[in-house]
Length: 243
Length: 239
Image (cartoon, rainbow over all chains, first blue to last red; front, top):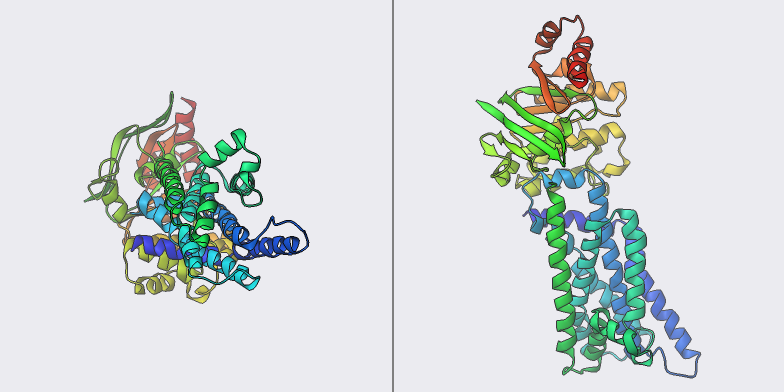
């Protein structure tokens, strides 16, 4: 009941913010169309839809981190969170209430991105559904990163610093725009230790129907998501009751 | 019966004692005003009693429930209207109240009662961020009332409001007397004198004096409540 009431509030706050809708739904579409136009005008195959669409679907999820981070940071900045902290709500109620409204938003975002890719020429197949499912652990990871940032930083820091770091980390380290093996070395090693490229590779594998490699990528992302979420819970609980 | 019992409540940050061995009992249904200059320890005391801050020593009992060891039980019966207006800005008046009803498991009909009680019915579909400061403050208090709390903390409820809005809120607070035990913190002495049954004066983390406004004036040997406050709060601050 408490989680439901709080999740409902958060959903309303999110969908009533026009910037959320633009960056959550519109920006990935702009990128997809732009890269597709570039691909049609260059002689080499660098932005093919079968690798580009899953990558941009993942990149779009980075904005979820921004939304969840800003929501929690703004609540912390005002006395609204203090009011709720004095209510019977537990730390788990809070975090589920922040997390749950963003999951359907993540699924909707992935579906819209892939539907646009189909309109641009990506073949329609059942594997598209597997792509959406494969992106759920990544969605959880980005929401958890947002909760962590929102717990630690104020809304300006979340919007500026965290937003820039997460979008750049995903853009450069997920292998969306270029093959990471072309760079190789420490860059490749670090990128494959982090979860972003596994999220993108998992989505690409799901689209290609490469079921043998999919579980490994999903497991890697899921472990990272669980670790970040656990850290966010611990820190949020500490912040909830000052000592 | 005492709704609030404060037993040696203390808060220290490093070597600095912000609230020092506070002892106080507030009977059920009383409106008790906590006064003090900035840094006297009022807000820290309210935070400890509303389970937002863990005391260093001592305890507070709300209807018998310890804020240290039974905070979940205590949170079921208390509500806070914080110093800053604490509303969800993107939600309407009705949605803000429904949120609080949902969190405390109260029926939705309760929101209509509270809106009626605080004169918010005319703004029911207005988003909180578009309301004036006075109406936002009223909504903030309404959100605290939805749960029908037995203990209500009003932390500087009229801070920053103009005279008319403040007087209107006084009427609202007067209307709450007897329905809940209320702890009110304020910098406005006339507010405390006008609204409260008893007043406590804090200075340097200690409770300097407790009594009715008339008793405090007699204690300080002053004709006005302001002079009595200056004498009692200033004396402790200087010592």
